[in-house]
Length: 326
Image (cartoon, rainbow, N blue to C red):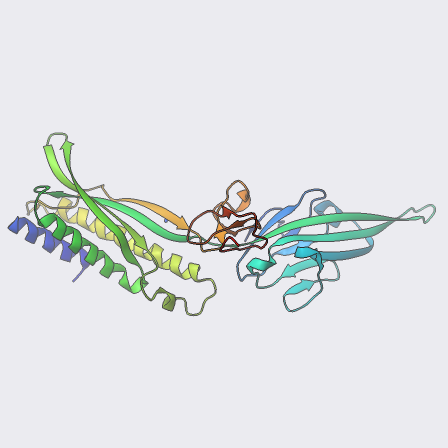
């Protein structure tokens, strides 16, 4: 039986009984340095970094004689090609399968020669380019929802029965998506409605969460499981929205029936997306304006122990992605 039909039947019974990111990227997908200005780059966890070019864009458009490149990574370690780091002979750097500890300052020392045509005099020019690379992941979505139902009275067992039946129907509606309803609550209020006087209404609130028991089984060993859980929670949101649209349609178009005393209040459905970040990650729009919606790895001096949305200060932390203050 379809969910909206089931709820409709329950309402009649009760009446009867009472929602890579980086800067300086060019059309080629490369990121160039800026002399004297660190370039911030954001790399999604377990993805490859964009191509970092050891030149500024203007220099790259010109002929370069005897160029040399030296890349130094976090902790001032000289970088060389391996199974994770790829450096081309033209100074382009790519980091594969990016992880939290790979975040930090990447510096390229670039030198080349200028030669005077008249005298063949050579001069060595040196330049340094800094790139601040941060791992990030997408936030985990959940949705805070609110609806209203009319009721005969604020006193009596049927309000609680409706509340429990509604939660069960919604849970069943999204069960196959490994989502569930959490923190449900309701209150009964008197509402003055124009031309209708005082009406008793139940103000119902709940959160749709993508982490029902067994949710990890939906990941299929994916390293970016938030992509899966966020896809599922979007589907869950759409199903619930359609469910309440159907409730409104039933009572607005079935003219042969009298509205039950307990029914969905049309246009009362409200929804707000709530973001959270995994431990070791957080949002900071001021520091990471180019990735304001991202959960960016917590920098040294900060940590995030739970599914909050910000990194907390801890001066003893010296690593990226800290989950505790130690």
